[in-house]
Length: 499
Image (tube, rainbow, N blue to C red; front, top):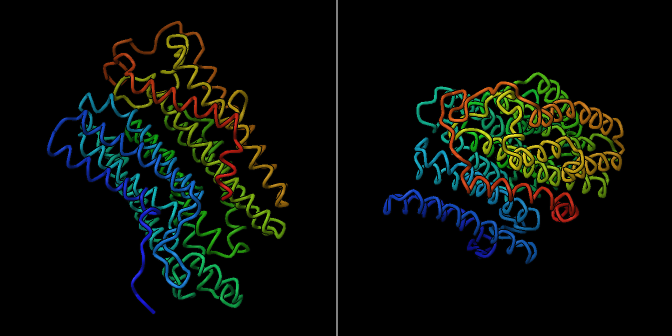
């Protein structure tokens, strides 16, 4: 058998573009030393990666790096969706970062390079066909974020958040690698489809204690990445200490990457009868704890962080239907996987819009502040406040935020189709709990403020406010329009997620 492989470079084009963007950003920053040129190159690279991912995915599934039918790179509809969304999120976060970069809060070249590197990991992650590619891609997505969280100059909170994130992520990666190693010891395979086929063909392998340990370690390690309870404690502190745009990236692209990795091993490699009960328990704990703790938050970013934890529970909920036999039929499983991916896409768009709204309403370089700092903000800045309010209402799952409404309906429908009516009831109850804090914050945006909480020229942390930078307004407007469009035509995302 020939050991020479043919490489489908078309299938790899999105990864080439993403990695090339990171390299080009470094070169431009070194040669030209002009921040505007560096940011422009990063933005064009992210946009090109998004367009390329969509075009390659539209041409049907493409495979490469294959051995005996097992492929390490599988670029189809879902990989194209993930690559496109990650690249667009990177573009949006880069736009939100422009005011702080202009103010010298972070070095422009390093910041744009790290964002591009993280984007590369997200693009590769969607097409990963084996455990090695999956874990390396997930770490490529995550590693730059350790530095980005702590890159804000002169901020002790930022440094503390970076250390917290680093330590927790190292533990999570260790568990994931150990689980992958044990799974390889049991099956002798690394390709996800090969591992899944072996475990399906040989039931005796599933009964081995080593298999149980491998499944548990893989799930727990990836649960850290999506901030699922009880592996969530790092998220609120890290989000609150990071610069606002980086917190937005953590809450969107990073969480999407963790879900894609988790979904890949659950759908293609691990036995559904073992993963289903674990995922159902994680979903219930995550959505319930996240919502209950969010009720008590007074800092804006911490509230968004805890709500993000709760949203991770909704994303995991469809996979919990695998705990029941009715949820393990082919049709029910396909619906559950599509619902999880679709909900994640709806969520990240609304979450980016929420962070964009907070960024637009806060002074340049400031943190998210408290909820009192946003009180009456929509009276002072009607359009910005309305955009933030629409994002919050969408996350709550209420009209006119139709994207969030359709997302929750999709999850509940997939659970009912899988026979998990009890889990659908838990989702519905938690959605009601979530209304309390989402609507409280939204109402506060239009509340009267007899005495201003801060002067127009400075935030509570002493950061001087400036008029809204045009690029932030563009990001806020585009994210809001995207949320509206997805709410009107949710079937587009569902169809792509099901491929």
